Amino acid sequence: MCLIISGKNLNQWGITPPFRTENISKDSEIIRETSYDIEKLNAYINTNKLFLIDDQKKAFQTIMKNIIEEKEGLFFLDAPGGTGKTFLLNLILAEVRKSGNIALAVASSGVAATLLHGGRTAHSALKLPINFNLTEEPICNIIDNPATCKLLKQTNVIIWDECTMANKKGPEALDKTLQDLKKNNFIMGKVIVILAGDFRQTLPIISRGTPADQIHACLKNSYLWKHVKIITLKNNMRVFLTGDTNLENFSR
Image 1: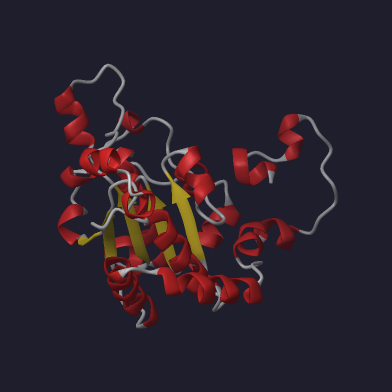
Image 2 (image 1 turned 120 degrees about the horizontal axis):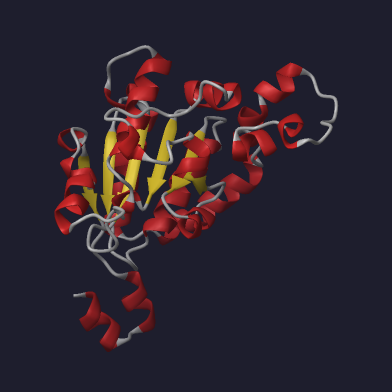
């Protein structure tokens, strides 16, 4: 776990590590992402699939069709607050994982990551550079992380929530890394990647930057954007369930 979180082993922290075989260390990330209870996943799917409303169901079917047919796909789920984005993403994660496939759940913030089942921050899970300004073409720092390298090679689906507040170089680093690991030139190495967020909310934070710098760092200004298939959620379930007219007016 120390290696997964910080990229360092216990020896580097001055702590004597327990004896483990090299294979266990290299497979730690794989074990983490394939140790889900299949019965619980099926029960979760059977219970929650019934609650999908029309636009959520259409989004779910579109994405799952690509996953089942093993087609490459880069999706952007445009979902204002209250439209059931997290509910939909967790259902997709369960569907992929119940078949023994690897669905990696990451988010740009720690709070958003806790809402995804098995979620982690994008920087932690993908070993993204801390400072994107140090290089024009950043890549994920996986050279010293064989477990992460092996995980990304075997990953089928990646969900990245709140990607709208991430610097565009983050998804670009993931794209270059996956192409290298998968040894192909398809976008995201032919891994299905679902980016989700809302451009109406917080944009990338640029230290001492201007509004123009923020806009330049947005995902919409990345070379990836022309490859994105946009799916929109419009029905605000938070308003529907509470019946709050003030909230309804604000959401418009």
